[in-house]
Image 1 (cartoon, rainbow, N blue to C red):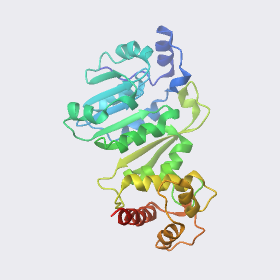
Image 2: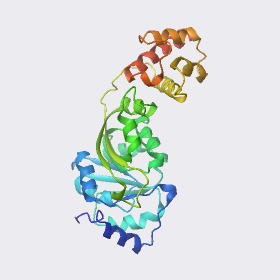
Image 3: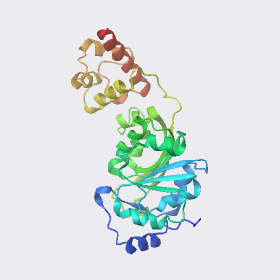
Image 4: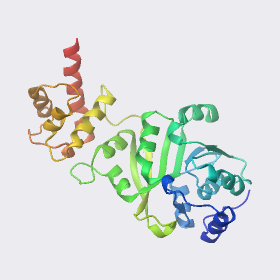
Length: 295
């Protein structure tokens, strides 16, 4: 098996020139050109020969080469058809790589895991296009794809939001959703000069280790996330007003007030002050009210 060679900027430039490749802004293409960062991603993802890895957005195959060396099998999903012949070239010596030319948001990943890995949990490793980071990560979690972990390069600001807690300005619906499904850990901050072309923002590698069981018990997952979204949609408003204005459940004011009171919080509390555990309790209170109203 060949040694990875695309982490070297000169080799990347040669491949791009050979194929007269033009970066597509609409696909958010920024290729990694730093071997230290690539090594760090592979190390922190804890990949072994027992693992099947899903890579989203392989680009010209830079990280794919590293993944192919470390993993048993790599499925690389690339949306840009112009990159497929390049990937066929840069990865031709790696027999354990399968390239799929498709939009990952339209793929049934759970089905692929079932067919290719016997349903055993996979690891996701990717340098994600920043404009669709959240839909990709949440899609993997919400569709209950069998996962061990997701180790991804994202915008630094997004990584901060994923791992922060109540009371922080970055805390929001994304923080709670990610932490419901996984334990986040920022592995490294990555400056713009590690990419080609350079992004305008700082980046970070974050590892999301899937919880075996959710850290909180909720009667209705969807209801809890609807409540979380309603709480953060109007950040300046109190939690009570946010839930009332959502207009989703037709909840009397006093029911909302009582549910908030059970948390030991005052009427003026805002959504950003609540932990995941408190949102779960609030959601269960509202669920019980709605359930009893129906029955």
